[in-house]
Length: 331
Image (cartoon, rainbow, N blue to C red):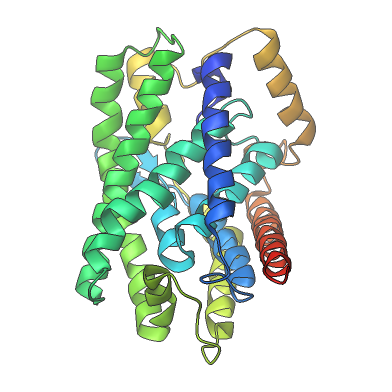
């Protein structure tokens, strides 16, 4: 559901960038010393790398000719808490945009809102958390994961339709576009929900504290070690990015599929100074556009590079926030 710049007018792109900036600022403010400690720093980095790698694995949606990939918002929020999760997913989307030309710069605010805010802040707090608030079990984790992901993705997909309509994209009329976007993202959401449930049930079996502490808004106990979890997710990210990504589906994702059905193309064009400037920035920063070298090779290298970059930037953001909060608490 990574939107390209051509789907948006400068006004809508700018407005959604402001909305997402407010959500990011609010998340930084809401992170407190009561529920955020030094263990969150490597967790943000490693979980961000895992989601980056997971987003490279497009899975086929049978009978449609389309594909999908995980968004990762509910997964991140369940492990990190909603506010660190939004910051981590923002790092993923920023890296994808600037260094791999996946999602436009003008559209970055929309992508953060559609994939991040809808899942990490809305889906987690409205669906996932209430289901698990009183008692955690694998059955409840599965229900909360599937419902949380499906509803978050429906909100995100509908937001895409509204954003294109507000931008005056006549090639994608509302009724026809929404009639395709919602069902295909329902199917994608069901798959992601199952994957999310499987990962969280694994965590619940090995380190249940990682799922209970975000719900209770408290720090992990000092006696709880996260070293094995970090190693497991780091290895999983490496395998996904460096090997499994080579076998990802080549079918268009849900958004591209819907665009193709409605407009007859997955690439719309806009020729104005704002779109050209945004495109020039990404063209100059992208080291591996579309996760590959010019000859089409390099998918594994792109996955590994992107995962390491996400680990560094998401973990670095966690370190800066932790240091600032700790310094503020001492004054």
